[in-house]
Length: 73
Image (cartoon, rainbow, N blue to C red):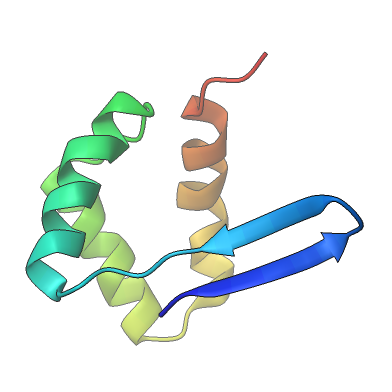
């Protein structure tokens, strides 16, 4: 999927898609660690199962940890 929006005059927002799932997975595996997003596989599985259960209150802790670990200036 791709889209081009101009939410404010002179400010363009481009949303790009991936040609296939393999490219999306590879790109995410390459870029996310560089951006400081590192999840051990166990945490990823826990997060996945929490989402499957629709237990949104349980997402609070991992999401806070994710945003706390993101570099910011």
